[in-house]
Length: 374
Image 1 (cartoon, rainbow, N blue to C red):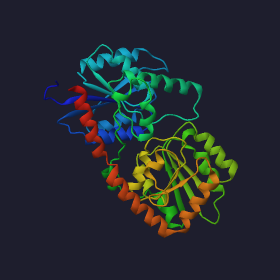
Image 2 (cartoon, rainbow, N blue to C red):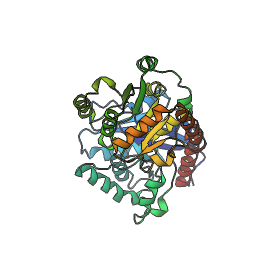
Image 3 (cartoon, rainbow, N blue to C red):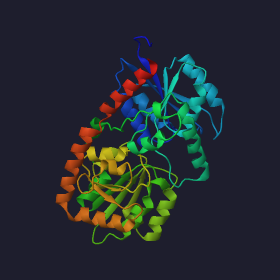
Image 4 (cartoon, rainbow, N blue to C red):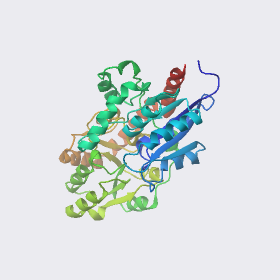
């Protein structure tokens, strides 16, 4: 039985960027009761150039942080580093979020009293063979965790089929920090100027990677007729140069703005007339929940995760996966009907506030942490 002192939990996240999973960690720790759970936020840096934005943000919020230096794609020194830290700092629970932190964390917690819980945020689709192998190894490792808490029913159901994992699974639905969205009412100047000139503003916030299907959005926009539009892509990723070349080749480069990673992403979001997510694979997308909370209409691919949030023509619009013609049609439908945009954003706001708050999610994790220790 654990004493009355707070449980100390190390959240081990990614050192690159501040996207859905990293913001998810920040939302979780914000709503945990500090009298019951003390949160520490850490990353494993495999490149000294990584700026560990997750730790920067957590430190600004007043949380203790730790950056482990283990440069190179394979550096076994991290296991020893992490184990020592867990013991020296008397960490009760290690909470991991990706295949690398899962595997390293599992090895580091062997033989010590620290428990480990993993939260899968989603699996890659159409990735290379190396990534496929890493994620397969992660699935093999999950039954050896003390607990596994997937974010959605679509992540949960396949995991139930893994031998030895069923009794360790805890389905805890994804949540968003609604207070963070509600306090942001400013629109960034560039977007505001475009709106005031009569442009229809489409936007996306997230990583520029193949899984997000952004080339489908770009192709769709070449078919949109009689609409003066601009697209803002907020985020960074390996596909940026490829997407920029695609814009040049399709003759739409002047209307597509690659603004990079931005701390003021919510000021961009507030200016969007529609948020578009053409992903091929998602958990429960945080970016969609933020858009719903900001009263921004949504068009998303009809895939698990997206269609958990989007009821077609009620809380948003769905289009057939990888079908740029269908996406064009949905964009045109939304542009032409202000009444539809208004009804979608109102219904979406009600839906997300009633079902997907970070506070509700944190309560469930807190109970899970306590049960793990006791």
